[in-house]
Image (tube, rainbow, N blue to C red; front, side, top):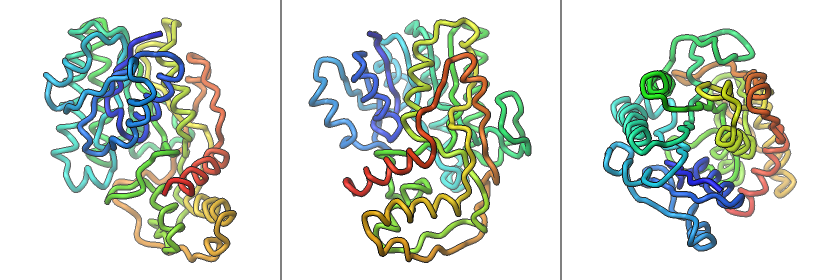
Length: 323
């Protein structure tokens, strides 16, 4: 049993992490300001684990809120951030304030509290304009968006705090995470929940570009596994490292929509007939993304259990029963 603070714990990834940690017997505190997270994600946990789960309503942009949340904790899973490349292009200032200033506040609060290990959500956007495939952790290009800059700065700050203050960190570069509880509403909804919502409403999804851009879509349970391995790692060589968090398989957007129509069509035959529309490419998008997960396998013992198709089947079932 360990004591873990999950920042952004009311969000999609954060709430799934809170639930998984509580299920294995850990003591969990959640810090969230509900800018993008939802209290509905936490209510079952508050009810089921009254003695093991604590909610702190606060903002990582305020150092005092970070200090309050981290008090008495042993580990931090830092998930709080403003995601979305388009959001960062429209409003780079707020993305910078949350993703960089907020990250620095959490590092300082964690350092001062004597946190054993700081594990944080990094991003595949850090690879930027690098043409190499698969993406290996040590080979990156120039960032293509303000969001990508913020996530790369996080990695740099974590490394400096490790070297300067002796902190332990592990950064997990998430590759297009999807699964239960991912919000399909709002202007910056991710592609999978957005397309699921549109198809269920018999609307025509719009693919940016010709649909041949590809992603290493990563099911939430693989992400949970990586975070737990990062928490539990005892191998000294595994710490103060950045890891790709993915399945290691490439899927085009055209293939993705085909799978969604196939799986949703099992519930509603009409969905199979819906036409897909195409629009212009989106500014800041990385064309092709495929992760090498060899480093995570070698140093952390990572063994992802869910392929993209298997995870997508589980996700579609969840949306059908919950949307």
